[in-house]
Every structure is written in C-alpha cells, then in structure tokens.
Image (cartoon, rainbow, N blue to C red; front, side):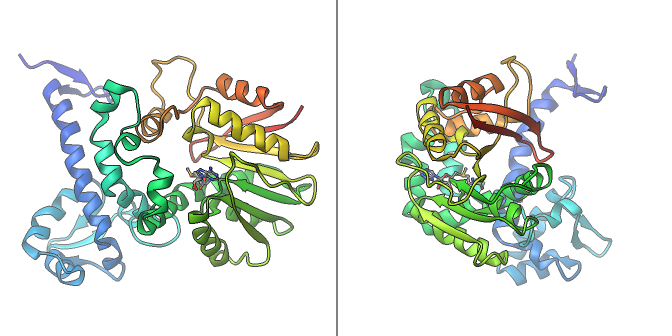
Length: 348
Ligand SMILES: C[S@@+](CC[C@H](N)C(=O)[O-])C[C@H]1O[C@@H](n2cnc3c(N)ncnc32)[C@H](O)[C@@H]1O
C-alpha cells in the first residue's frame, strides 16, 4: 500500500507525490526563469496575447512556447481564456519591469555561476565550503569583472531591499537624525527608501567601486540629487564618519555575507566611525536558537552557505555577541513585515 503523508493541510498525500512534486517544482521554476529572462510579462502589459503572438513579439520559437506556457497556469503566474490568450495573474505582474519587480531576482538565479552553484549543494555538504568560491572565487570579484552580472545583482538587491527600506523608513523614528551612512549600500536602495519620506535627511553610500554607478543611477532616478554622496571604499579598511550628529549607520543584509572574524571587523570599523549620539541600524534575519526549528531564514542561510565561506544567518544572541565585542549595545529588535528584523544599537 502506498504510504501517505500530511502535507500540512490535513490532506493525505501519497509519499511518492511529495518527492516528485519537489522535482516538478524545480522544473516549473526553470520555465518561470525563462519567462523572466525573455521579458514575456512586459509583452502582456497591454492585454491578453496568444503563445504565437508572444513568441513573435519576443523572437522565440512559437511551437516550444505553446507547449511550455500552460505550465505557468497552475503555478499561479498566468491565466488563459477560451481563445488561448494569456494574461498575467497578480503574481505574474511582479515579473514586469518597474517598481517592486522580481524579474532581476528570478534572472539572477539562472546567471551561470549562481545556477551552477545552486545545483551543487551536494558538494558543499561534503566540503562545508562555498561552492561558488571553490569554482569562481569571491562573488564580489566575480561581479567586478562582469558588469552585466553586477547590474543584475544590483537590480536583484533593489527588488529585495525596497520593501526592507520602506519598512525601516516607516518604523524607525528619524526625527532627530541628520544623515544616514549606508555601509555596503549597494545600489543605495534602503537609503533611498529612507531619504524619500524623510526630506530633512542626507545620505552616503559606501561600497566597492563597481557598485557605485548603480548607486548613483538609482538614487538619481529616485529624485535624490543633491541629497546623497557616494564613497568607493572597503569597509574592512574604514567606514566614513558623519559630518553631523546624530546620524544613523546602516548595515542592511551585510553581516550575513561574512564569517565571524570579518563581520566583527565591519562592526568594529562602524563603531569606530560612530559618534556617541549616533546609532546603528542593522537589517538581518535572526534564526531561532533551536537548530531544528523550521524558519523562513533557513533558505537564506543555505544561500549564504553556498555563496560565501563562513557566511551565515545568526541567532539573536550571536548577533548580540558580535555587537557587544564591538562596544555596541542593542537598544531594540523589531521584526519587519518584509522578513528581516531591525536591530538598533548605540555605542556603549
Ligand atoms: C548583499 S549586498 C547588500 C546591499 C545593500 N545593503 C542592500 O541591502 O541592498 C552586499 C553589499 O556589500 C558590498 N561589499 C562587499 N564587500 C565590500 C567591502 N569590502 N567594502 C564595501 N562594500 C562591500 C557589495 O558590493 C554589496 O553591494
């Protein structure tokens, strides 16, 4: 007799179907990625189109696209009408270019190095080391010589960081703050979401040289010209101080990229740059103390494991330990709707 399992909704599911379903979801993802890669969602912006029309618009093979698009109907991306014309569901809408788009996030997943690394978790489990680094070296170096991939990465971070920035802007009191220093700010997305509604603030993005054009472009496109500066630099060397106090230093999705020694060096440099009145805002996803407890941060932790040696999501007490060693005291930890928590700290 086939064994059944409870798939979480009290419906008995044959055990084989659970495993086969996981394999099929991987194949469905590859179709989603191709859909994003070819920009098909944007071709549906003006109304429903048949597979043949979409193939023509996107320069694709009509017979192949006709066979593949129905896979995205049960996936919740497309609807089809009786005339075989497709339109986007709300989830499908997120694959169009524009604010809150997830297109770059999906495309980055099939960037050759990202794709190869994700397919090789088995090797990481054997070595305990990052599969990306073993094959391609540091991702920051990899991106520094590939402007197209760097731009895709920056757009992916924009997709992810916009909602985090909005959450921070809406939940933290910036009333007395004069400026924000976004350390490892990438495209400056979190910074721009904070500067937008808080017109009295100015901001600085510190990042590696190859990230600076994306930061300039993004902050300029957000209408923030005159309110920001960019600094090309290395946060392991130093972090620029603020001209006015109190200022806020931001570390958004940074510490989880590094092992404890490197994370500590970043925090030490931030603490050294901070004045007594300044504060530190950290966006990270603390994991539960129970190592077996399921948590949405586990997949992010897997990504850190395969992308960077020693990088990981940390528990709240591990984060507190690093901050403590840097001479910083935690003043608050608030979960944000977008996923991470906002951890605030000040100099002891
Ligand atoms: C995961 S991204 C986070 C970007 C941004 N904080 C956000 O939330 O959108 C990490 C950033 O750290 C930057 N970075 C890596 N090594 C760095 C270094 N040594 N000095 C300064 N920035 C660095 C990367 O270029 C990248 O933009």
